[in-house]
Length: 149
Image (cartoon, rainbow, N blue to C red; front, side):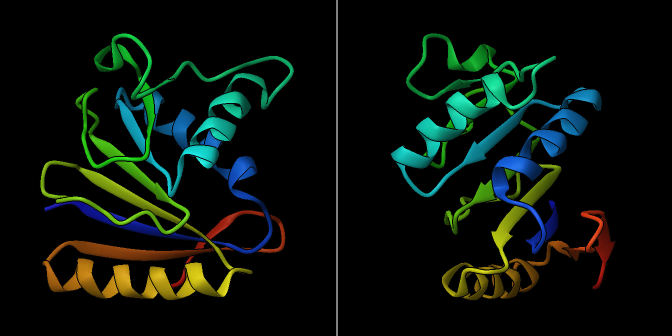
C-alpha cells in the first residue's frame, strides 16, 4: 500500500513548492513522476524546473523526450510510470492511476482554488477507501509544512 500525502498550498505556488519536494525525493534515491492536469502545465513546469534557481536546476524530462525511462524526474499528463518512479506527484487535480506500485503518492493542491479543494477531498476519500495510509499537511504562514491529520 502506498503512503499518500496531501499538501495544501496556502502560502506558496506549486512552482515554489514542487522543486524542493522533488529534490528531497531525489536525495532519498527515488525516481519521481509528476502527473499534471494538462499539456500547458506540463510544458510550463518543464521550463520552470530548468530555471527555478539561479544556482541550480532539476534534471528531468517529459514523456515525449527521448529515453523517458532514464529520467530521474518525469513530467507527464498520463498514468504511465516509464521511469520506474517510487513516488508520484499529482498536481492540478490530476486523477491518480492505480497507486499500489508506489511507495509514496503526493497530492499538491492550491488552497485558493475551490475546484482543486473539492478534487483533493474526493481523492482523500478514495485513497482512504482503498486502504492506503493518508496524511494531510498544510502550509504555515512561514511556508513550513504542518501535519493536520
